[in-house]
Image (cartoon, rainbow, N blue to C red; front, side):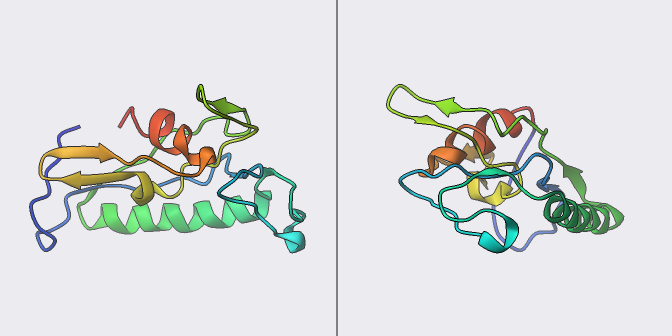
Length: 136
């Protein structure tokens, strides 16, 4: 993918819009412990995002992508992975990953470089930055 961003006011030509498919409520880790009892995830529990929430998020993301495309902007989407599988580095292991919705959290264009940010939460180190978006 060829990238280029030299200022903040030129017309948008190409963008990446995330997907909610397969998004997980992350397993607890030092940086994040979710507490969503109203959605079936009291503190310390984890698992797939409820389907109605993922569908609603996808509906919004798809509509946003359509608006951008209607304005002549090229839209790429990250691939969906099995975010429920464990991930690890030599220093730690994590029971699940997160998802591919928050693209702006992990990728930024500066000049003609696409930079992948280092992510502090263990659940986003591998799943969002690496396998989902690297093919783009």
